[in-house]
Length: 289
Figure (cartoon, one colour):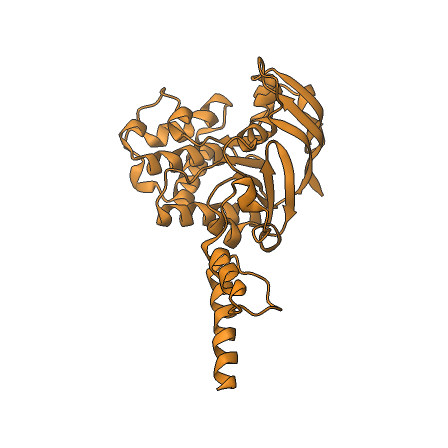
């Protein structure tokens, strides 16, 4: 069942002449983890803001086409209702901290307080998401006394605690080291397995290759490719659009040009795939000698 349905979406910000998104059409199924890739200015954040309802309810501009989430038209809902259905995690976690609370625990509970969740349920939900995001030891710290990576996890927890049906993340690992990045991707995949629909704008293609169900490539506001990570991340056009590719794909593509990658084997996008391919080359070479 499609949770997100977008048909011919074109959006232009106020006081600009060129659309940020152009004729974008896509569907996302319940529990699917979809990654959005593209260079800066491709429209990734604009797509995130649209799904989260900020467009057209906060950023006005001109929106054409249809955007529906769980059967509801984005134009016909109130933003205060929509945010309970679709949660948005910003690229800069500092922008997401309320400033109204003194501790991480209180910050995460803030949204639940605003919608009147009973105290015992609030306590359970806050403790669950803190454990899920690995920040239990930060409970009594000030949100402003944390590192960027720690703030990013607090921002993620403050959205997850609201239990949205759809989770939209705009480059959520930009402040994280590789260990923190892996932990966030693992949390997100676990949520998808639990039925949460995930849309993530992200540059880190090697992590996308390992964790995402599907990849959508954007350039100049248009969808230029959609499919499995193996299909999209090996598209030879990506570098022409300024989209980075996996180091494993780059090495194998160069090896293929020198006859050192099996012609019948798809280019790899993960370390395991690259290892298997080069091992096959090594074994074939050994048999010849």
